[in-house]
Image 1: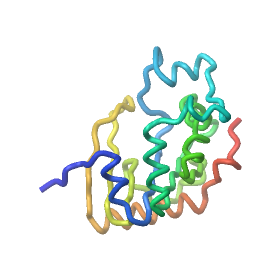
Image 2: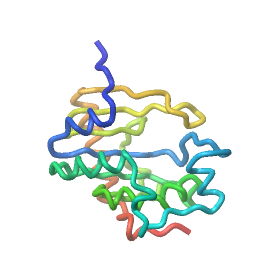
Image 3: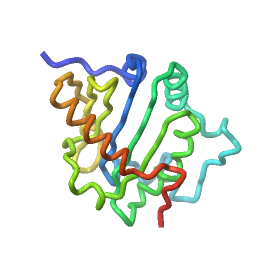
Length: 175
């Protein structure tokens, strides 16, 4: 019987020690006409000094999770030169870091010999996987939960290898 997929507050609320997230796509479905990506394309950038303007519920959740002693890490495998969407992510990642999330970037060319799962994922406490499925156009196709030990080991090993090779956000420079 498939496990029901919890909300992100439930998922991260269940973490006791670690929550890691691996992203492997160069773009995710966005509305080019409206919303944060469109605003960014038009020149809008968050002002790091104006925290109230960019703090949002997701960052509250990360801060609360880290505040409970859970280490939250995100690794992104990216093609270089980076896509426009990756630039958008990069420009806003300081908000994740401000909330307590650790973020690293790995150029895709340096990931060729890593055994990677077929989907982005969250791995909670090294045992619970939330697979993130996407359509070919990058829209969310829903999540799926798994406690399969072999899949959890694949995710943990892949993440740690990417993390070890990855460049901390503050040191990663895009051209």
